[in-house]
Structures are given as C-alpha cells and as structure tokens.
Image 1: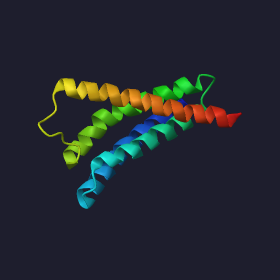
Image 2: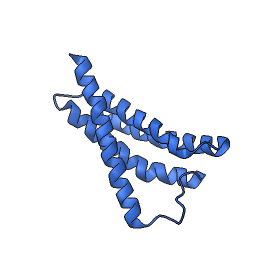
Image 3: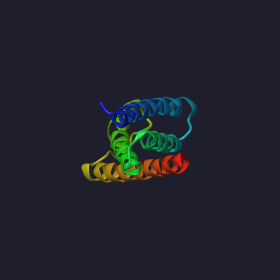
Length: 126
C-alpha cells in the first residue's frame, strides 16, 4: 500500500468516524447537523495536504483524488451512519436521483477542497 493510499484510507475512516461523532453530538445538543460540514471540509483539506506533502510531482492531482474518495465515502457510508443515528435523515425520504446528485456534489467538493489543501502543501514545500 502506497503512502498516499494509506492517507486516503485513514482519511476515509476519519470521515465516517467524524460523521458518527457529529451525529451523536447533534442529537445530544440539538445543534444542527449541517454545521458538521465544516468539519468534513477540514478533513478533506487536511488529507489533501498530507497526500500532497508525501506525494510525487503530481501532488495536487493526488490530493484531489484523495478528496474525491473521501467525498464519495462521506456521501455514502458516512451518510448511512448519520442516517442510522438520526440527524442525517432527509425529510420525505431520499430517492436515487437526489442521492446521486448529492454524491456527485460532495465528491466534487471533496476533490476541490483537498486540491486546495494539496496546493498549500506544494506552496509551503518551496
């Protein structure tokens, strides 16, 4: 397993764990689960930074790929975990089209945010 793959795997585990903890915190405190989005973005950027820092010449694309995987994980397994706990449930249910569009948006956002983290790593490496 390459180092960037390890960063991605650890990041995916962190995203699902964060979703679970944020869901529990939301249920206990009553704070809207939407605020957890900021924490997810921080994870995307941090993992993108780490992937680019240890990566090769294609560091920013490696960071973006890491973010894409984290976004896909967040919008599938992470959402399923938060749905099971409660705060991730969508009023009126969730059809396939709505889920797929959300999946695409979160994956793209993850890639973009992680690429920004990767860009920071490349800039600071100089």
